[in-house]
Image 1 (cartoon, rainbow, N blue to C red):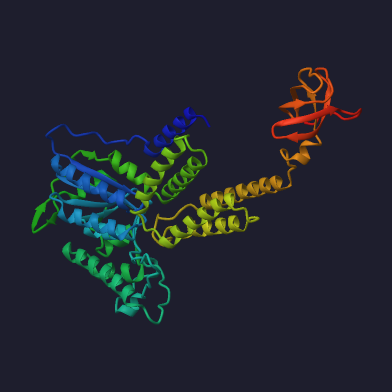
Image 2: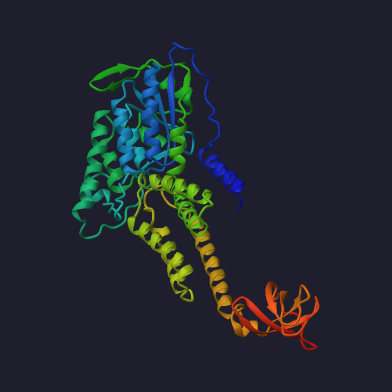
Length: 471
């Protein structure tokens, strides 16, 4: 590929990483007029979502928002990011109204903690929350049955069945579980919500629909749309730090606070599949630069992709065993190119690479898995490239030799100029120009055959009938 092509490819890659569809915002209130801010969290809870919420709350507060609507639709996510968002909600100087919407949305796992942290919580019809059992990144976390903890059971429709406990839960699992229980109970106690169900959601992965959550005082009310949300929130007294305040938000305009470019970019690169592809693009770009030194663009682009991919990986729940297996797989594939072993190193490299890719991210964390189709596609491509490499190696081993004396003595050619007896001239032999010498005088165009070689000088004689020029 030409340097111009690499430039176009690099620009296209950066544009694809940073482009996002334009956000559709609600009508903006006039400067100085009262308004309610809206922050939408859609998708897994991770570093990008936590940074977005932190900045948006500060921005809305500085703009003078009367309240903040935190609209949720999340399957859960990382505990550290969730704790950061909870801390921002509790430290906010204006009341935050948690709202699970639109219809079909959910506040599962980490989303349940965030909803409990909001001074006022609401859900749209046909939404649900719960299943807040923490997932340990090092292994499966047991989910004790609600009955084992002295908690009352709800109807079968309100909680997911928990698997049987193992006989001995280790201390680390218990610490993680009890810490999560204490956190959600403290949030429920702070805002006067159902502590029993909160603990059940953590210990037994219980879930509730919107109407069930309102009936069990897990949320404050059900609101079909933002207008209904503000109407039902108006006049309610909520706790804000050590003080209480009454909301006056009826009919106020809603101003959206979409993510800025940094939050969007962070959200893109912390997608596990994107981070995985960036990592591979970086590695193979540097390998290509090593095989073709001086081309620059593969190396520069590969270096940028590798650094961005590594930055994303350090924000994600990465298995270092998987990362090590991937590195070993790439190393074995490169070694196969330099030390042909009939595919032993190459096959081992493909196996290590695919296994490492599957193990790279913790699959139990919602939203943080690499698309299996991408892994299989890259693995199949590596197998095809390995097969082509082995085929070229075998062809090279069985190819005839061109430059040894034995092969040269079998070649015939054509004189490019007439030569005198004992003189020298030029001839085309084996597709190359050689300086030749003959004991007899030969005209230009005569067919000659090589009889001996002295360095870069060939001795020739007239070719016998039936001997044609070799290619």
